[in-house]
Amino acid sequence: MIRSVPVLKLATALVTMLASAPGFAGQLPIPEGPSSFNMRQDPMPELPQIKPALSYVVLMPSPDGTVGRVVLAGERGDKVLAQAREGAWLDGRGNTASVGKEDLDRDFSGAMAARPPMPEQFVLYFELGATALTKESAAVLPRIVDRIRTLPTVDISVVGHTDTLGKSEANEALGLMRANFIANELKQIGGKNMTITVESNGERNLLVVTLDETNEKKNRRVEITLR
Amino acid sequence: MSNKRFVFSTLVVWSLAAVPMMSQAQTESVGYVKTVTGAAWITTAGQRVKAQPGTPILMGSQLKTAPAASLGVTFKDNTVMSFGPDTELTVDEYLYAPAKGQLGIAARLDKGTLTYISGVIAKLKPEAVSVKTPAGIIGVRGTSFMAMVEESQ
Image 1 (cartoon, each protein chain N blue to C red):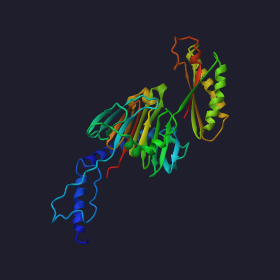
Image 2: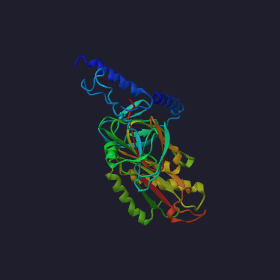
Image 3: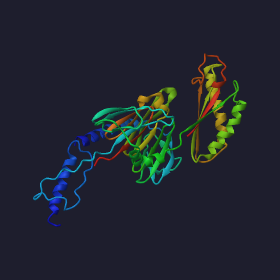
Image 4: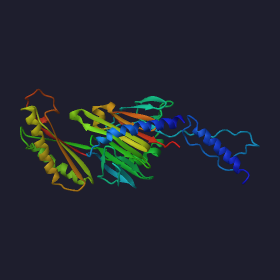
């Protein structure tokens, strides 16, 4: 036991030296005990298998089912991921490969369970040139209020829009009045974990693209996002 | 060695880049904590607070989870990120002013696990969204991904 300590130290030093050599970023298992090998008597054993640092990126489908792309610029190469569950080492070495469900569950179950709900969007429509909701949208507003009440914490953005009738400056102001009207309704809900931001896009962000000076009911709207 | 040197030089570049960025640091929230399990902290301008639902995230905030903890954050542009145990992420840059054409997210994942669902910024200006890690930079092209960074020994 005592005699083999220097041998173990030597083995540990060798392993440490290898670990710090270029290209060996991973952890190396330390030999398990004095019985693992004795340099004087035994031939040099096989070097332990080197486990690379498990640093990787994997492309996932978006919540809407589409699959985009990830472009990786790594220390040792560049990669493009274009298929669902295609993964690459973060340093860009080697080839990309499909990552199995077991691996994803093992590595990401904690992070996946913490994922907040996706933001929800609602659109309310307005009467011509006014801050009065259409009859249909007036009926939708209480449903949004109910939804907000179920959320433990919510930040809300309220963005007002207009159609292209009238001057663009006037429409900026009208969009803001519409947004403020809705924001004030939502503020009645109260609750300490609610923040509301209000802005106007005026006639700059049309839902239905029209020529200038066009009466279009779908453009007279407020978009509400609950996050 | 080459690995360490890379990490070191990258850190130098980042710390230099952080100087002009901090001078225009914004006091506006860019996102909020939505979920927390276990202990997690948000450090903004040297102030560390325990994360709870509703804790604001600002440009420059560092997000950290304890072992066995997790955290979920939703940003202004509907980007959704969540973090597993023993994770550190810094929001180096967050610009969301579509009317002025100012759009961009630069985050830095030093260790741990991240799931990422991109939002409006990645749709409007995909080349302006990146997550740096010690070994490589992830560019997001309007999508969802997950990344794990094991600290180099």
